[in-house]
Length: 225
Image (cartoon, rainbow, N blue to C red; front, side, top):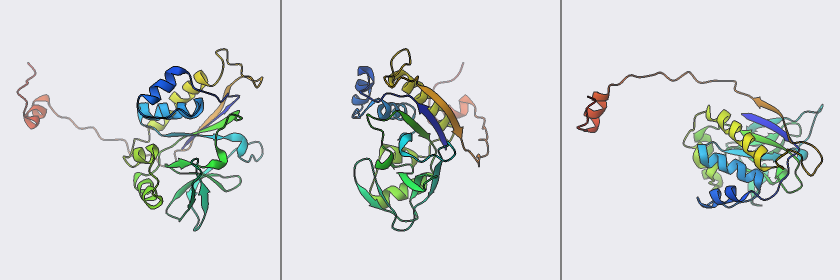
């Protein structure tokens, strides 16, 4: 799970090129922040999400994001204004300082931390959620999204870092004037990026195969002269 805090953003319409790129693949433009996360997801396959930091609780000047199973009967209202009653087999993203659900892990964000035109500070999520857990939760809730479909196909955990890199660069490009000075009177700033990766998988083992073997299996007449 990677999280980044960005301060001093300006939420508004996306530039024409970003709108056109999303609309060309059937994605509706929402605002420059949400569009940036969707663009990167569609480009490299890493789902991302943005939370309004001002709607989260700080303790000792710090935000805390948690991931836990839902409590029996716990409820969440998603960005589409739909309320879901949850069971413990559904994972949640929480404001850990308040133990409040702010998203359904790997599926959809919650209304409570929605990015709006008044948002100035955001927390970006780039994470890797278990494909089986995500698929079962989506089926139980009958809530299938672009994110859940990608996670059930088990993208590489290493993709999180590339997704975070790309979305931070894109947000800095589209969420403020060219000179970086926002109407709020403060410069846009990526304050910090945190990467929590407690259990790294074993490195993949390489295998060797000859071109001749590949061609024999595929039935091709091509030979490397």
